[in-house]
Length: 266
Image (tube, rainbow, N blue to C red; front, side, top):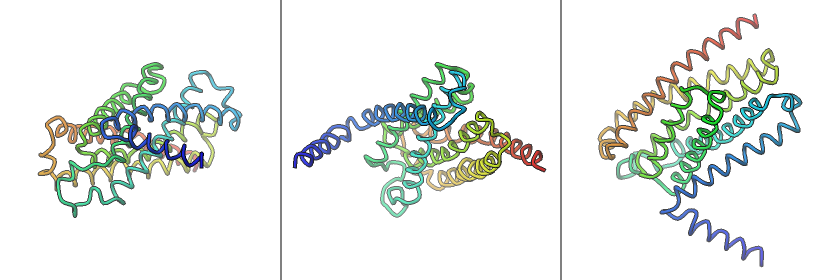
């Protein structure tokens, strides 16, 4: 009975405070930062025990290793939720009344807050070790993502398009695994080749085809986009266009890398 009492009390605290509308964005942001710290520390603990190469890495390499574990955890979470909300939940269905650009829920806002927490944590680490964790193009990518996600979290506008863009995070685990394999000295392994092909396909689907669908959806729902505030209206066009341009440039590099790897295998 005592356990049930404390469980009930904990649920009330979460529902009445952490998930209450006025504080939801801020509490979810803090939860996101806390979860990033947990993922970073867990990556360090598991890697120290299971990967023989980990202790021999330099301090900066170990930090990047842990950082990539953290980013992979965020990517799996946010891309899974994004796919669910965009394609398997009826919240953004055209069959419902009202502009699709103004729809939201506590769950969707909470998830965006967790993602904001991640981008803040990752940006801090980028600036701290600049440019070891990524050059200016990665900083620009993170800043644009942070501004767009934070705005749609606080204003509750355009969450559908934010989640469409966040599906592209599904490519992050493959990118990180490529780095892990390379750092572990397994660049010539079959796993490296298979992962490269998966990364190519994932990028093509999540960062090329999906963005084309996004622009198509925006075209047919332009009258609803017009109902957004001016800052949100600008962001909903600016961020996907800039990110799509970066995706095309990076996709070209991935394609060259796949061709180079396949040529070596012949």
